[in-house]
Image 1 (tube, rainbow, N blue to C red):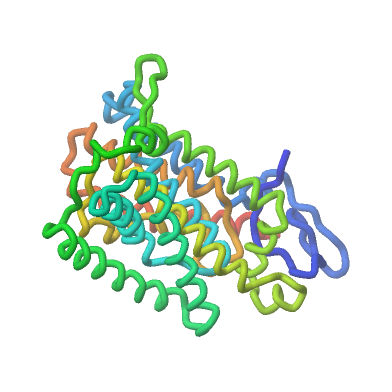
Image 2: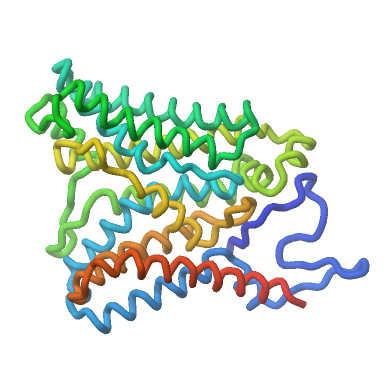
Length: 359
């Protein structure tokens, strides 16, 4: 069984192995229970399970297959973005422009295809290039200037927010793009990004499958590849990582580009789900992606986390979002509930880590 305790190991490969502590020259092995608690995804798994049981009890509608499919769909649209955001956080950075970058990708694909009367796949490909370029710009600015990622991506956030609205109004004369559902290539793109399939009479969105596939891929990268070691190393101590040959610049820039890829994918889903895009959307979603990663066990300080934790974190968001509706409660309480959940998850993760590392 793979040990999924993820924290920054010494860059040179020396020091105690995960699950062990160094004490006066002797190695003391921790109990299996403490090693289990040290995993960043354990706390959020228990929290997600508790939230699920709670809403199953108070909202009978949740027990229906269609309702659970809706919960998973809501979770997947958050979770797909939460995964690259989590990897970036493990690498010691975070991206405040992720929410509006989703809308930028959708606007680019829609307006380029419609205004130039092109096959929608042309817009999709150009949009991917634009999204990756935004990520590369964020990473390049970070390593070039040494500014905190908070400031760099806050600037990008404001730029994209203004450009999204101004360019859309200039090109379309409206705050939304035109309907592209009758254009060439739309049906094929919709099948990839926004289709549904039937399981036992329940319609499940394709984004749920993509979410789980991306989560499995991200987990494999973190656990089994040299690139995963680089992520933990630069997040733990970038100077030490650079001293032992880790390509810090490449790792940082590529992580921001992964966020760009996630923004592109979710943007394409939104475009081909609704056929049009509102230029002012996306603001505030970046905080939800970051919160899902934090609830999933990732630290803002970097060097610690997993790809599985944010999956459960996104599921908690989707469950609460839909569970409140199914329970018949006032949806105005949703954000308050999420705030309490975020603070609770952070405190639980802190307690779990301290318990797991205590003698």
